[in-house]
Length: 415
Ligand SMILES: Cc1ncc(COP(=O)(O)O)c(C=O)c1O
Image (tube, rainbow, N blue to C red; front, side):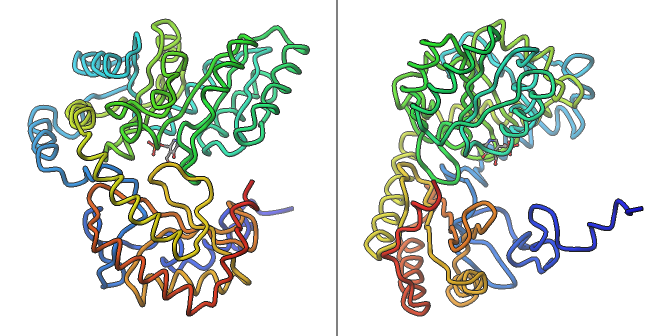
């Protein structure tokens, strides 16, 4: 007879090794101070490259003032209940209309978290005989939504990352096997790699095979496209995306999510997404905050320009040092670094944090193949040239101290 908790004492589980280490250093590092380009880690100031504050909106004084005013009006508790029962407020509807207009779609819905919005949307749309086809590298929220949807619908099938031939093969196969509906699920900007989904190719295929398209643009929303309208806008196919999804947790520096599309499917999700029906609604403070933030994002070309200035300086500098940044075409800056052993990977993180005061996230197996460490950096509009130059000096020193062989181009192993 096995005790259910037996596993909890070992180092099993997805991130079990890190949990067991429990050192608050590699995982759950304790960071002090409000999220910004400089934070305190273990009593020492570090340059922060690990938060998705693309437009530098954390700590924005005007947004803080909106939140204070909203707090006075609504308290910390409003609304009480889910949208369907007692949590609907005219302000929610007004803000949804604002987002629908901005995103140039008929209708929009707010969610209390991006993750819950994604899971709820995918599961609510998939019924018996319906099929999810999902990019293999899509975020956990989409994978979880697709897995849950498989309980009622057909088993979700992953397609190779951005591989239109594979997607077409699967569409053909699905059409042979069922006359049910098909939902293609992808990120817009890929949050770990910084590349963009081939949304043009996907839109052609979805039309050819009568499928629908869900784009989670967590990392493109506010960041790319005209007025920050996102990756499909950038690629000229925004009007073809059936369900465009953005989270407020990244460029908006807030909490919550929004999805825009045609009236009926949005209303379907509102009434059928269990994460919406059986959970408390986005708090009023955030409804007020994201409404104002949207205007700042929409009118924020100067912020996007600044973000790109910093991005180019950082990415060009790292490439000149010989680092492999894979296929990124966005501010997301992944550094694929070969590590002989896991200890070497850990030593690199320690060197950057403790010796040079540079804080980057380090991602290891199972997220990336063994033998690679992925340092992911997010340059923002708030970083300075000095932050970049200090960081480049640190990466140069690390390359030399660790005697890194950067000719290996390990990003190719990540396909
Ligand atoms: C692609 C993607 N989708 C969804 C989410 C979840 O969003 P939220 O933090 O708003 O729940 C994230 C956040 O990491 C993400 O990167």
